[in-house]
Image (cartoon, rainbow, N blue to C red; front, side, top):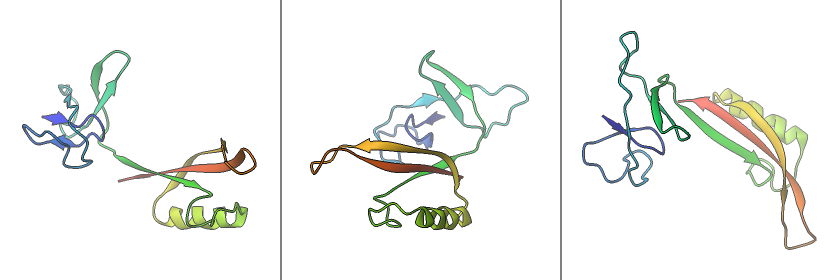
Length: 122
């Protein structure tokens, strides 16, 4: 069985495009399971060594919140961020990272914008 190099979805034999994410196929061969491993596991690909290894079958989805998100209308407000994170937490999302980024602007130079990264198992 072959897997999409972009999203990890199983590919139909002879597929030219991933049926899950739509990316042209860059397949990764499935690792040969060891005796104690479950055959339903996915794969990890190490680009440094070009090796494939078995991974857990867990899949994750990610979301990035910024001031451009519908919650904030372009203005940072800590109370709105708290409400947004609690609303997403109710949907199974969890915060895995926060940062600020300098964003170049055509009007008056750069501005800082917050970025919050959320993850949930799918």
